[in-house]
Length: 187
Image 1 (tube, rainbow, N blue to C red):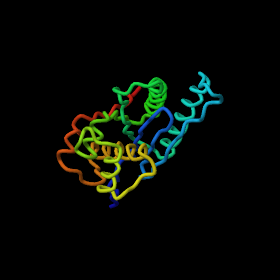
Image 2: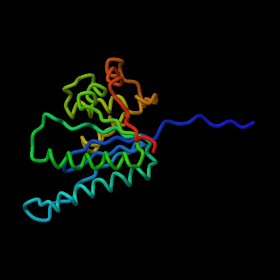
Image 3: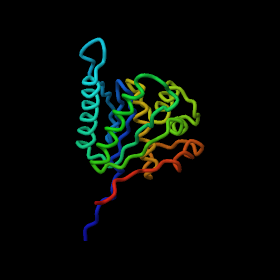
Image 4: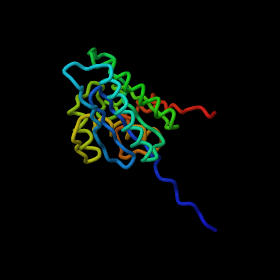
């Protein structure tokens, strides 16, 4: 009689997207920063924006596919921020979400305040506080704030799925009930 070894944690990634760069936390725990290509001239053109969108989507899709990602936590847009980059970020974010959906990767859109509460217990936590919390809980320092937030998105989804990487206080975990994984319907 043979038995199957217990299944390990699901392959979960995390994303923190911005118009110019995206933090990516891969299922193996590594992180990277994906920078958008620079504009060809002084003024950003439609073609520049399309190249940026294509580049970010392709880089993320390849990394998630290569890592056999099953679910991804994506930090939601900061709706209170008003800038010219907001529309570019929405286009990039929508393209990435669609690529994950098409690939059958479950998607959790994580409100920025929920991510901060999970990490620090404070809905208004700063980027520095997020980094300090990552060091306190996981012993990790990240090269960028975007990679740190992406790691927190990954850790949160792993906890939602019953595979916490470390223990955070119960008051931090209260946000887990608000996280929903969206899955593509079977065709």
